[in-house]
Image (cartoon, rainbow, N blue to C red; front, side, top):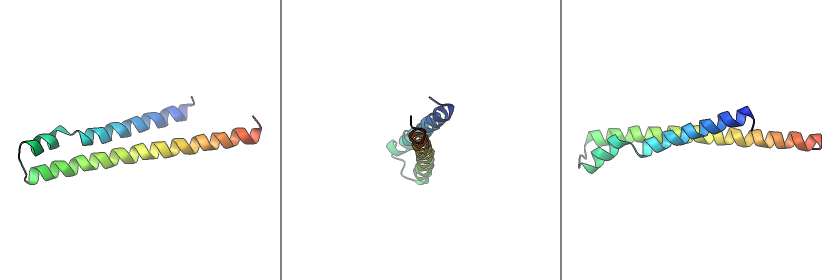
Length: 82
């Protein structure tokens, strides 16, 4: 596996980890389940949403770049007649 593919896969893992952290944020869930329906829960929800969106953007960018590199490599091998 080429070095660029490894880097992109590690970038995708980081993005998935960020999204998972945002989804499982303990501050939000503790605040929501404790019955605290005020401003604090709203702030934790927005903070968790930012992490989820950021993680999905990083994951999506890595997936798109990996797909483009694999297509480019496939075109090169077909042009070379391999």
